[in-house]
Amino acid sequence: MSKTLSCACLATLLCAGHASADTFIFGRRANGLTGLSSGTVVGTETTLSIAVATPGAVMDESDSDGMGIDATAVAGVTDASDTKFNMLTGSITGGEAVTFSFDQSGILNSLLFDGMKDETLEHFILTTPDGTIYTLFDFEVEMRLNHQGFQLSDMGVPNPTQALDSSDDIVGLNIPYQAGEVFTLTYGEVDYDGAVLPGYYPADDNLNPTGDTPNGIRFEGIVVTVVPEPATLSLGLIAMGGCMIRRPLNRINFDRIVIGAIL
Image 1 (tube, one colour):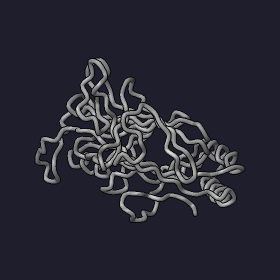
Image 2 (image 1 turned 180 degrees about the vertical axis):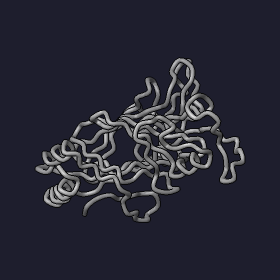
Image 3 (image 1 turned 180 degrees about the horizontal axis):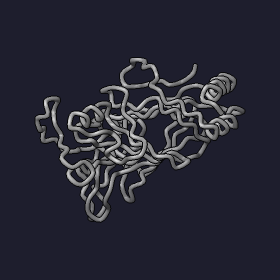
């Protein structure tokens, strides 16, 4: 299926199915998720199910800028921040993670973050229901790498994807999903002190060392387009046909929320 035909089909099915946007914003204890390992958030069009993938950890929405994962009560684990996603050391190692799904089929448009730093190459890893992996970076990561003679591809991560601007929001994902299919979001860091990017160091625009180190990211929100029946069958067909429209969506400025819906 050609990209032009696929995109035309997508527009048709969205209109036919009366698709509409739904936005979930985390932080300020807005959703009652703090202290829970899993929970649900009822939106205007669909219900989000979200769960901590890190054993023994819980969600923390106490910060106004978004959600973090709190693993401080897990035996033998060192968690540098209970209000951010970060790397754990001790009895559990690796990046903190959550899984999420929806009770209606639709399209994952955008993921909203706060505190994603370009100099230190910290990022999120999004694994889609079909196993495709996207590595989500701050919008200036490529520029930082280029200044020191590196390219995005030098990091060796799958599908590096940069934020649209300094908001740290990843827009234009447009990933179709069926009801109940699970996404996984995992915090990650690039080992630039080792063999991955030998010689790279966090620096300002003039290549002066900043001394910065990765210090975690907050998960601020999700924007989806809900596609009710009978359009869900067409969603699957389009996904198989390779319709992945990956271009930045127009931003509507209502402070950090990016709407990628077809009204």
